[in-house]
Image 1 (spheres, rainbow, N blue to C red):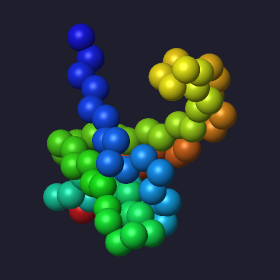
Image 2: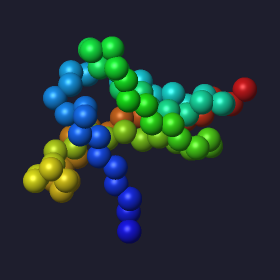
Image 3: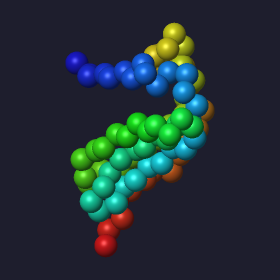
Image 4: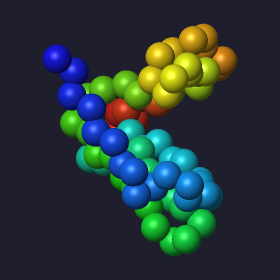
Length: 77
């Protein structure tokens, strides 16, 4: 079974910026809000993050893909 987390305390907040980081020692997605708070998702290394914007029905059923963004891959030094 897939695990799912919800973050109801962020519902209604206005997003200022969304950043994806995939560096050698830091892998995360950070959502900054206009009220000077942030939500950050840290991930394990050696991965590729893919983002997709899609339309949903009833809050969780994917209806159709709107846009797929270029993958964010780890910078090798």
